[in-house]
Image 1 (cartoon, rainbow, N blue to C red):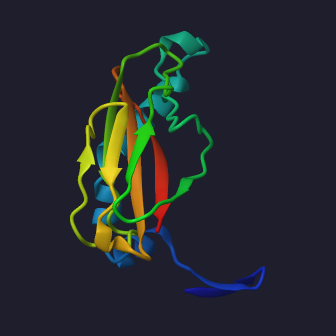
Image 2: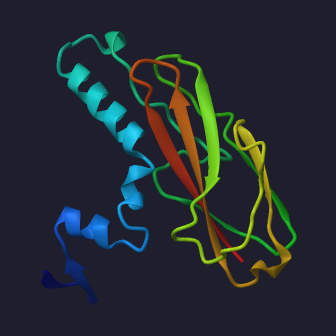
Length: 162
């Protein structure tokens, strides 16, 4: 382990294996996305076999409430409020059909109570912020997966601050 001082912040650097194994959730930190990782690797290998862009699959673009950047969408909310997220502008460069999966990303979230996502397998999803969630942070992850071989998934994270 090396101690590194960068722009005023102290940080320990670990090799990749140590980082995953030492996360609070252990190896589950990466296992939950292992099929997506394998498909991504397969697609990248296929890209090396051709110059024809149209003959191989590409990742869809996840868009939430018009936001398509790679940075998380940060929202402020009040306990008891219903928030709706719209990913219907998400698209696939190859024109493939898309599947949607919204989920609570529990590991970085502060709130450990039950939260229900309505219509979590559709482009438009809503969540009712629990009344006892005052002062907490909740992370929601959108997975957008195309219908191709290999199926490729893109992600967009929402961070809700209360």
